[in-house]
Image (cartoon, rainbow, N blue to C red; front, side, top):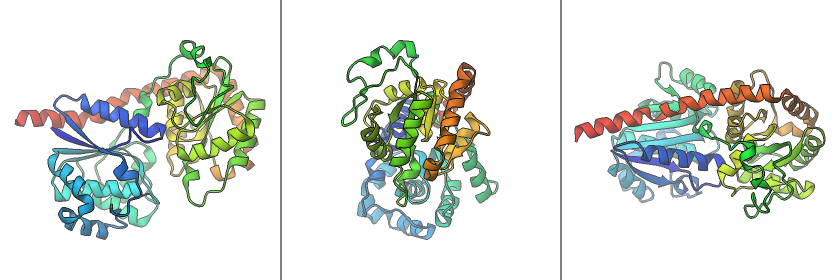
Length: 391
């Protein structure tokens, strides 16, 4: 079976995208009978005006009518014509104000209606608050052979949008992360330059002493987001004084822009954008507490037992993550961090003081989630077997 995998995010400067890109590529290639071809992530992430991103379903239908004659889609059309099946990693792409989600929906629709290929959409979160995007979802996703949603909120809203629609609940592959135990790497972490990834550096990070990690939030990617640097400087200083030493984390470009300014103001160590993801997982998983508004760093931290103090994100995803990790705990408004420093510090202190009992509960939750990830590829394995049997 010739399987087309899109988008391949393993080269994207975002820890979560790189982790998922590598996991899916390796797992799909390991399925017996699968011949994997990848569509690079640049097709989705570049701001290329030639590539359509349909604003509504009527526009998508018109694109489909001319797909064979559209020069901008020539490479994509050739890849779809040559494959037996399309597998898409949706992540957090299907949301307002992003081209990526609309292009994914377009690719799925072309594959299904123009090229008559089986289509699998995995690992999806859906923000259906924009009516035109919700219409695209309602028209495209029910056509697909498999839709896997990774959080309860997306599942509830999709079911309400299209009553009776079939979909599956899947577990984010980030739960498969396994941080090294502190005793296995803490001494190594003291080497000069161990966590240096140009242009960022982590001078002053001592992994043998208690520390907590802080990242920003995808909410700050919004065009109208206020500059949160001053609030983060205040927060990090308070956390360092009252909870534990602070390590700044920049898992994507948005966080890097903020955390480099925080580092300049505070001198705190920074784990940068280009750090190998596994090194970041080791640090997050051995922190006393992780504070931030990023889905994958929160998951990576939890795999080692690190509790989360959460900020909101650009969708409902952090509320969904907290509901599983710490039911009843607040999710702080990222636009009001400066007003909530006392409360954030208090929650971080409480989680630190909860000690090993809380860490054990978090690890148990992570282990439960991890055990369910393997089922995400069941349909691919069944299709590969059917393909082999038909030869």
